[in-house]
Amino acid sequence: MELGIAYCQKYLQKGDKLLIGLHTDTRAAFIGGRLNPMVRVPLDYVVDDEATLLRLLAGHGSGAE
Image (cartoon, rainbow, N blue to C red; front, top):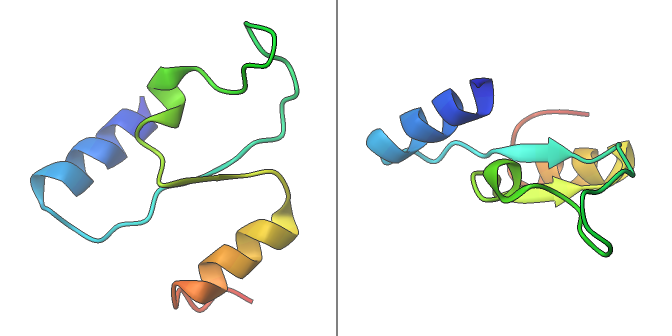
């Protein structure tokens, strides 16, 4: 539910919020599938590990270290 609220706020305010998912669950509903479209579509990026997440955040000037 929180993802839907964040996406709606970003969409309605035409903001530059960055929505990133950290994918840690290897289970999938379909062979070769990763994320349910209801989760995947609102996200700007999906990363698989913390190092990639931190690199992405640093590249977007978030101040995360």
